[in-house]
Length: 485
Image 1: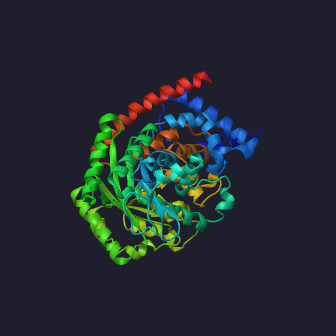
Image 2 (image 1 turned 90 degrees about the vertical axis):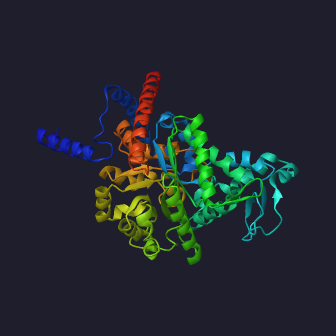
Image 3 (image 1 turned 30 degrees about the vertical axis):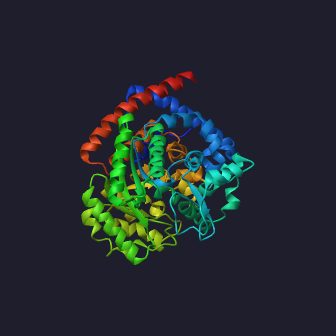
């Protein structure tokens, strides 16, 4: 048997690490402690089973293989009920489940399909110069199909990376990114037409609301569209459309707090287009400061222009808005994509999208902790897009151990057969967090999404009060769930 001194030293190390990690200082009430006991019992049983039979442990698998197993896990049922606070990293055009898009939008008579000039199919709702041939109503082609189910499945494959053999179909990061980026072009035409734009974004809010997300920050270019009368609406018109859409949704969903917009543009636009889009952002930021809250650059970082090349072009934004930069979405060390983390810090970013390579930079992660710059972690995205295979090896586990500020996000769930935020929260809970972390870490992650949001202080106070009420109901659910086991 170890000596008493040995046991004391061992326990001191464990307690010290517990106090440092994310959620380590969260107080739990007696009711929460009882609920935590049920949850931890389930979690530790699942982990023990995974140790004994590692091949069947869903949190270690590729999402395309794991999804059916996750949906059978009672822990996932609890995660679905979890009040998740806000979703702070979502690209709006990939936010809705692909199945809904096909079963609803492509059944409209005003949604067409054509061949893009670059050789792939694309949906359109208004004439497009990108079509290499005449666009045909999807319903017309569906009516000719001998197997309509197979027809719809073929359409869904255009906007969904899912495959039963991801390891073979996407052998490397560039292969999967090539299809991933094409899918944005496939679906973009749907957002050029106001009726389909509105229907899509109503569904986006509905799917998140049903998954207990109370607040949303979307990344979008927020370009113009054409309404059903042929009128061209500009970005300011679209700001009004979004404000009305959200207000209407809140009327029927009083627990939903609202939406803010981060203008996100491709990092590889030509100089003229880039300058135009920056000016548009500054104009929108001035006229809609409560809606348009920040600016970002998007696209595959490894192959894109580094942030350092934009310092001069973006210096006006730091005084007129906020940055929420994608940075460090790479496996490389001290390449341009990795060093984007340094430039994001120096350009005063408020949060970091992905920040996958941050763990390689001790000076940076300490600076992010000091400045309270949160990392937006999107587990499934990082796996599907080839940064990590087994999510237990994701650097977010290190961030949690060090209490580097993080929030959980879903990035582009519609493109990989997901829906809402629960799948990503499940992976975070079962793959990133310690075996003995339960409600404390879940509560901290949800709180973080409000704390590090772009809401005003007044909005955060309102959101906090609302979250507390939802959390209490969630504890009732966990207690009831646990007593049935």
